[in-house]
Image (cartoon, rainbow, N blue to C red; front, side, top):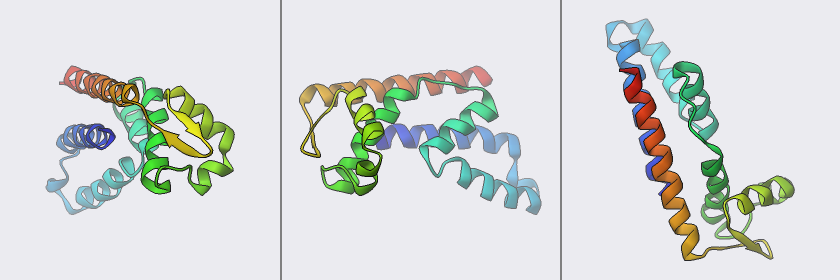
Amino acid sequence: MLSIAESFCVDRLLEYAEREVAPQESAVRTSIWAKASTSAVSTWDGIKDSYKSWYDIRPEWEPLTQLVEVRNAIAHGLGELTRLQRVRLESTLTKIAGAGVQVKESRIVLEEENLERTRTVCLTLIGEIDFGVQALA
């Protein structure tokens, strides 16, 4: 679900920005666009900063940020906190708790309600992004 939300956010941002930049009009624009567009979407922080600085679109990112922390433990730690997450343990546990997910002995414990919340958070973010981009037109 987070991957779908990420893909949507990236696609909407780049689709709208590319029309404005028109990189096909010159080699200079093509080169600048290639670097700027890659940098803008290579991380969630980049995506958030780009929406804010390019278009002043400011959805509520925190619920998603909390879920990304959970996802990282699942995807990169095989269900356990990663080494980096253990290094910044207090921050990690705060974010995971904010997502309503339990951690037992460094292991992520998911319940059905966590999946429902993830769905709601992703749909809400997609709606906020879509509304913000449509308002630009």
